[in-house]
Length: 105
Image 1 (spheres, one colour):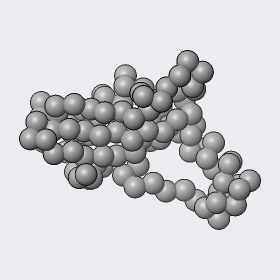
Image 2 (cartoon, helix red, strand yellow):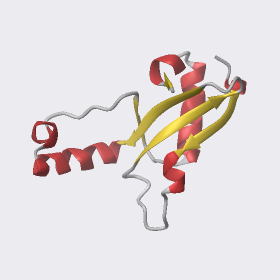
Image 3 (tube, one colour):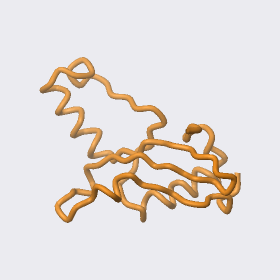
Image 4 (spheres, one colour):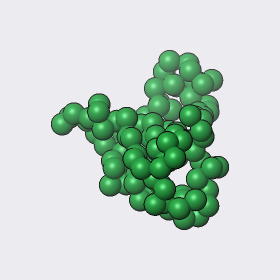
C-alpha cells in the first residue's frame, strides 16, 4: 500500500481532548480513509495507559484482576497525539504491515 492513498486520518481522541487531558495516558481509535473510500480502524494505546488500565483492573477484578489485557488491532505508542500517530501509520505502511494492523470497517 502507498501512503499517498490515504485521504484522511480520523483520531477519535482529538475530539475528546481537553487542556487537562494527559496525552501520555490515553487511548484512541484511529480510522484511515483511503482514496477509494474504504475505511480501516485500529486502536492506539499509550504504554502508560496499559499500566493504568492494569492497575485499575487489579482493583475492579476485570481481566482476571489485571493479569492480562487485550484489544483488537492494538498499537502501542508513546503519546496519543497526531504528531506521534501519523508517522506511526506511515511507518506501518512502509513496512507492509497495514493490513496486519488495521482491519476493514
